[in-house]
Image 1 (cartoon, rainbow, N blue to C red):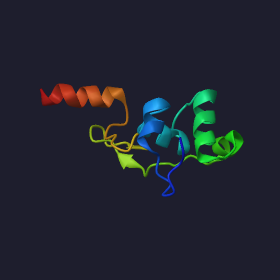
Image 2: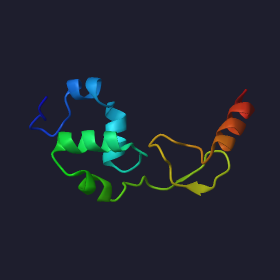
Image 3: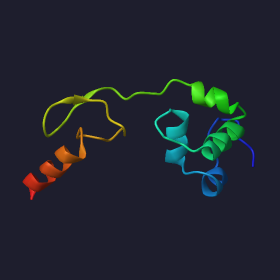
Image 4: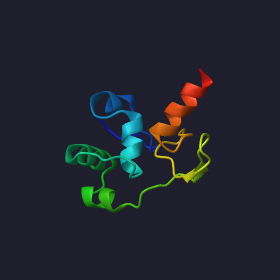
Length: 95
């Protein structure tokens, strides 16, 4: 399995090792990855595991919770609620 010149991961890597979303989360420092996952991603990109671990995490811009209005940093790009509690309360109000 070889890395494509464009820097994109090929389908074989995702099918055999990690999902695309999981790999991106590891690269951006948003995932609590296992040592094996770090090693696989580092090996694929031909960088050391230490380099991968030392990268500063990519943070999403702050948002206001759609339920309570509090400012929060989303763990996922599509997150709209600051907590499970707010998400559940918003769901109950809609129904």
